[in-house]
Image (cartoon, rainbow, N blue to C red; front, side, top):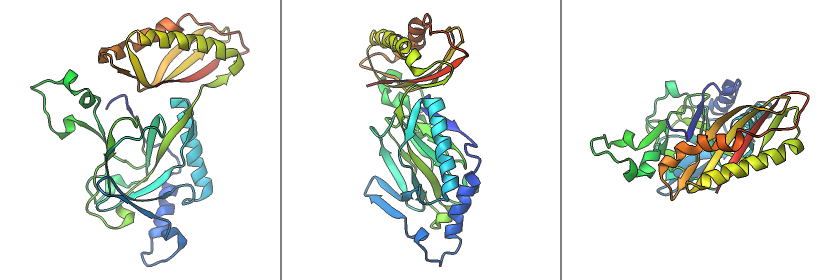
Length: 300
């Protein structure tokens, strides 16, 4: 799996409660209630076919709010994103699919949280698929002797129950056509949206006012270093560990979708070197304790 796809299994402790709420509404196929009438059959010929409804109003509020808070916490800690778009709840039964597309500019990362009983499924299809990075730079990676069948061109992610899948929405992607079931209780069920509002987060003794000028200077150096290798597009989320004395004790990459435009793909390998050049000598003011900084960097 490429660096443009992140997976987090067993993501939400109350996933079974959300699933039970969905099943309760469909337990009696002859029942008529407002909960059964909220679904939009979204059909764009040749592109999208699915049942969908806003997730916020569908589930018990306490449980759903807990999921949103978990998504927001994970997005801040891992991606440096402070928000999410209003999530959709989508159900895929026979004939439902998403043909290949991209989501720019909804947000720097898309997410799919699955409530599908994947291991008990009776349908075929339903995986999220993305074009492999090598396909989008096809001739630079071409090897005549290699296999050129479907799995050589696409990455597939199964919607396992309670799995959060996060991916770079610039990449062409879609959902494989579901076939074999008509009952919504047996379909592919997911909550999905986009992470938004990238911004720095500080946890610990330093204040944003103290850290901002030091971070700004380092980011400017990093950007200048990268521009030596060409223009860039994407996001890079960093984690900085700072001691009470103000010394940088740790620097790691949490998520990286940077791609060079009009430059050799080999430039990607130089990102770590550029980070060390820009950040290794920075020093923050002294504080009363350690600080952890999540720093998202956007290149457009």
